[in-house]
Length: 362
Length: 231
Image 1 (cartoon, rainbow over the protein chains, first blue to last red):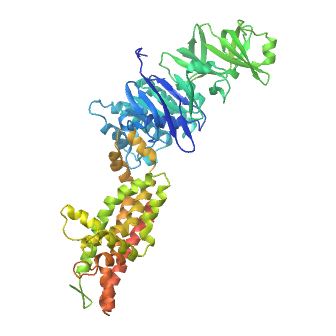
Image 2: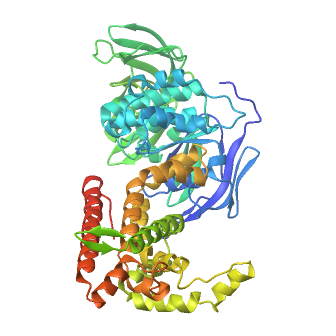
């Protein structure tokens, strides 16, 4: 990624009192690069913070700067229409009295004279809505509506793209398709993105860093690696500990995709051709078993040579084992206390990680 | 003069009524729109007071409203003197201006309520989305709010016009009953009845009845087809 060192940030401290709920973010500073996910339970203030950042609520107080530009100072706020942000709402928020094309043109017509319009054809094709352009928005499916909303936001040439749970209203199939699309779009246009979700899978797939929100406050801001290295990470609340390994995709064979992680190889079920230099591979800790020797004649094909770096007791007689790969990446395995004792696991011990299911997240 | 079924009908009150109703409708759409928007966006408890104030003409005897307006707008009153300071000549009561002023207050709820309901029905997300696409407030109002509240405007205009045509008490108080100047149809009917001219009263009353029925059917038709809320 090409990014200069004097990277600008979105930083501030915002308050927004909604009567029943109060946002009191505390100081935060978010680098304007890659995808920053705002993560937290519903009611933690994610959406309120995003609305405050966008200037969509006049009751916002505090201060906020984007790079050199001041967006909020006390009660004085730069109006949303001057902030150069794109926003994709949970329910798409398409204008019902306009066709798809007119929805897209709404933003283009209001571009500042100094900025070059984005390539309409290219964006429309990329999000896959060429066939919908002349349609009324009322009869679009949920997935189609979000595609239009994404194209509409991109066409305004934003400096910052905000997405408020764009997938939450969709069924699983549309969700998977849209997630892949969002990933592509972010990659292609290199836009800084603020993305709200409460689904850990979306975080693991998209995030470069995570803003954890709790009770109207920014609890902490971590890189995805930091967030996943913490055994008590809120990301693990649903499915238990998860590891995300970075690897290089290689050849495909028998419906499996080879991904090189360090000097070792993982085979991942994959039906799409991947043409990216690096992919993320997501492994649930409970899908990882440990062997002292490399077992042969096993249906599990993914065996990684690793080293035990830490044993973390989990309660209910279970242990979370942090394993270190040769290239420094780490992998969690969740096993029973009994197994840990039988194998006499301890830090520094070389073992083999046997992975039952591996999902490539892209 | 027009002859219907052998009866001479003076058309002046009819033209005057239509003119006053049209002017009132225009003024109320211009003033009522910002007021209705402001009220639709209010969150505080002041909204209750404002809603009640706007609805007052619905329950107050028109004579009460007319009486207070005579006090406020009389030729020696503050409002008239203030306007005279800027070179205004003439008076605000017992004139066409008086009729329009009285009608504007009397028909206020019929313009503001449908507009307010139409504005409230617009999801605020749409306006947020428009703001992120660099639309200013007025831009958003003209390109999102107005098109989405078309029916509200139609209902407001229709009801205001019809209600103004049908008023009696306020125009009598504010306009008096000057033939050719401030005599509107409803007062004209009253005069005919007083003078036992039942033929004229019959014809004018039937005209009013048909007109009102047609307007109400139009409004309820809109309600049924587009779900416009009234009242």
